[in-house]
Length: 124
Image (spheres, rainbow, N blue to C red):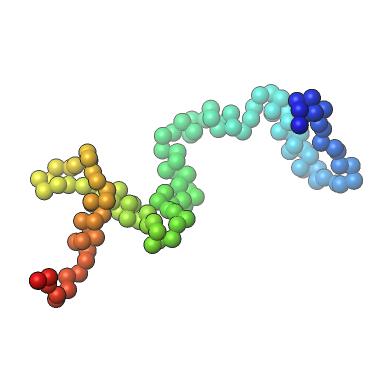
């Protein structure tokens, strides 16, 4: 479709359908607001609540959204492991919080090894 075609394109009016009067009034009200330069997006962007750095956390709490979730099966990817790691402080043997150069897979392997139950068998 060329630019000239786009300019001449019009949505045909539907004359045989009755619209509820409240819906028509709301559409007219929104049209007037748009003509004045007032849009919902602009209102949201200019509101103080939108500038709140904790807005995402508040939305997640209000709508009960899990920040750590996945559409994969648990045997493919289990985000609960990462959520647990995110909530645990990572301390080394000296008790100093270590946040630099963390190998996530090494930490996971270590935690998995600690959780394993020891059997009565020993390697010889």
